[in-house]
Image 1: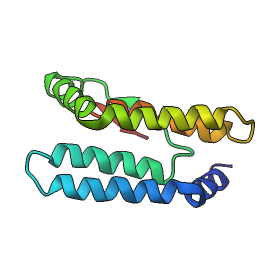
Image 2 (image 1 turned 60 degrees about the horizontal axis):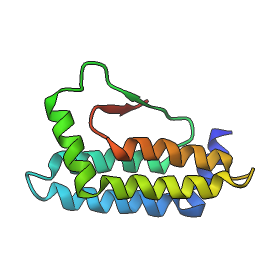
Image 3 (image 1 turned 135 degrees about the vertical axis):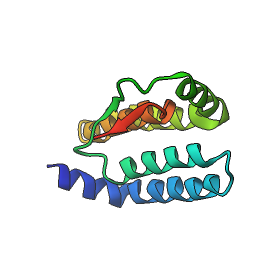
Length: 122
């Protein structure tokens, strides 16, 4: 079932979102200051490529001062808008029964894109 969901996800926009995250990640990695944020874009991009069958969880012991500062910077500099976009698409997809699995994936992406530092994908 995960394979079918991932294929449908890719066809209906998942690949384009993946490309957007990768391009932004590469642009951020051009600067030394932007490397940690670029790495987080790569992490979110990989999840948008194949979201079905993957989970996001907090990394135990990794929530230090630096992760908190980076999460605050991430939220202020654009993470809030990314998370709101996933929230809106999730709500729109949750209206229909067919869209419920895809809405769950958008809600998962929303939680990761709001505060990506200190989280891992498994």
